[in-house]
Image (cartoon, rainbow, N blue to C red; front, side, top):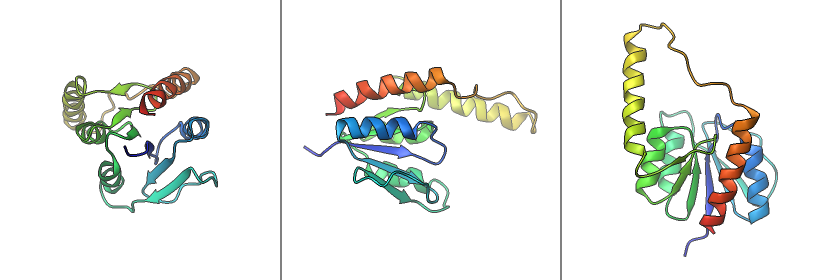
Length: 151
């Protein structure tokens, strides 16, 4: 069996500190993947991989590294879909799990919203609510559950 790993789509991830703490508690390595260097703790369980500026470069590195031994943290629905097909557990920074049963409708909703935004010629249709302490807490709880399953 391959050792578990947490792969983080790290460029805009608001819960890196929560991930570090949980990884240290469980002794599970974390690989941060981002377009450019991000500050991170100097700890043997935490590594940083720079993907460069290419379109989807970080996503490609994460998808390549993932498998049934992985927990992927991302808000990117298309990356989540790629990782699910390789057997990974995937969740977003608010603690919501992406699953094989839900990903199809999420990809479709994403496409509909992209079409709506394109049709409005720059007029805003709103966005996500700001990240809250409630979101942070929900993520921490979901992360603990996911890491117990991963081990």
